[in-house]
Length: 301
Image (cartoon, rainbow, N blue to C red; front, side, top):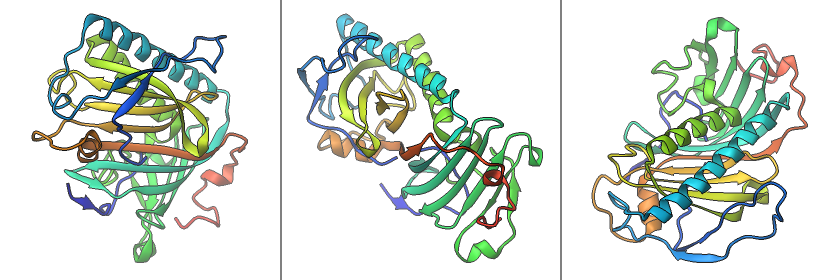
């Protein structure tokens, strides 16, 4: 697979690659009020690439267990959505790597400022397209984002773009209106509700893990039955923060174009399409009007 530098324009969504392993720990997250220190310690061998290629057979018991775990993940994400609604905003370092226009782009590191009402987001690229800035404020600028490139292109005038236009989406899978934790939560909830409705998943397991900045998380791994039943996703791995119930790390993998060979790690590396990570999340941040004002002296619009 070719690794390409990001193209001239495009933004948004989140993290790094490859979290497959030869063995994974299967457990159910504790129910509300249970001892969080207890969990199942049953080990299952991970599927080989040959088993994971096009179709996964699962027993009725496995499907029932997968449904229970996937519904638990949905419940956590719904709690995370409610948690976000109690916060005025936050800052974070947002890392993303995405497969766009038949290429896996380089990882990008972005300083993110987010305000809940009105929804506002400021992004400053620190790596991947260093110097790029994007500003979007709901209800302003005729619904358009404001953006400029870094490097020598920073001398060019800033542009106002519709968030979903081809230029703004040239190196992104999602528009700036979906940026941040709230957008990611909504996308994942919509996806998993559809998964549950169509029963397109073959398995869903969970184990204790460390997420961004070594925060305790539940790591959910979902595998799908076939490309026919889940055309985009073959597998997803998401670390949901235990305290905030938010997806701080998530990796999504598609189906291979040809029969893969080698380990599951190699298969995941070849089929990564979305990788997002939120580091250094600060919910003590109180959004200021200047943070979302293009005339801010610290910005370069």
